[in-house]
Length: 213
Image (cartoon, rainbow, N blue to C red; front, side, top):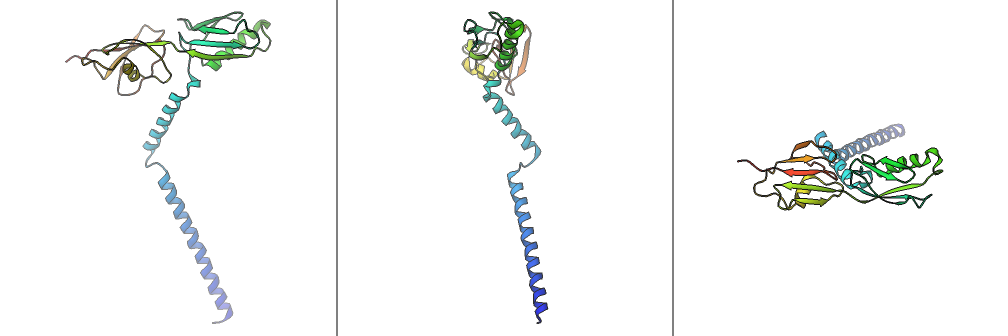
């Protein structure tokens, strides 16, 4: 075989080897993606929902303030204002030189900005530096067909089922699939099916009804 023919044959062999290697790499990459990815979109949605729920339960910094929550307000520019405050039943705190400020419904960070705005207006304090910390939470109330009804301490992430557990669990007469809640600041009792986690907050009143045969 001539030199040219040998060179041509060698080049053809090398080209085909490169093509085969490229195809093998693509197949391996596709296999990895198939193994790592979710089996179907429903699995992905469920995983995202569970991650969001976990994040929500663990991220206490985003907690929204409620009546009866106890706060420590630090005003570094004026120690006479610094102190402990409790949100009243209307959702306000009263701070010297700032007056009544709506706190319920705000996160601690947003309340800090509201206090800064109040103290800054009219030149009460120039460029005030304010910090708000939660010292304690308001309580919840659980009654009806539970073993130990009463008043219980709240903690972020609490659900109705958690509240029932705090009250000793259901009695034998309880309707275990239903609960009624009067939320803080409302006079309306709202019914919930207990087939999913329902969050409750400080001041909420939970009632477990009796089962009717």
